[in-house]
Image 1 (cartoon, rainbow, N blue to C red):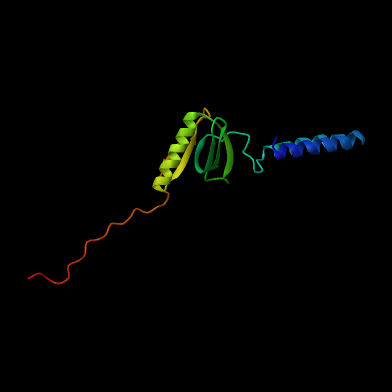
Image 2: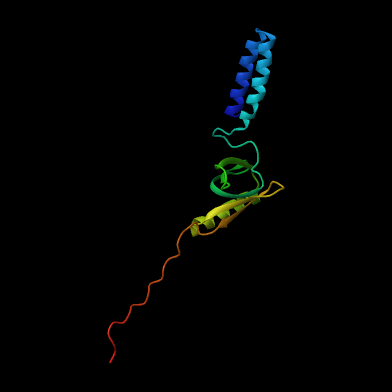
Length: 147
């Protein structure tokens, strides 16, 4: 269980105990507060989000591959703060991510992820990451004329 779910469950049990020995009005208030606080369990609070990323394009800010377990990625959509996700492990997805990370590191670029409607992510190296191409040396000018 995540910390958010544990905290919510502890609150509900403590408030339920108080309401059990209290009045019906207190019990009704408990139900209302418990229902209002339930969506807070979806907040990651340092743990990966329990939902899959919505379909779209993301920039991968960081990744960790745990073989035969999961793929952990920090994704930036560009329009919202970055979020931390846990993706299901598959050899194809892990190999695609590792290849994109290797190419991006060699070229100084970034890794992008496209989340499809079917829920399967695709990774690819994108751009040069703002790195300038090396400038070629200009030929020296000949000063003075040849006679």
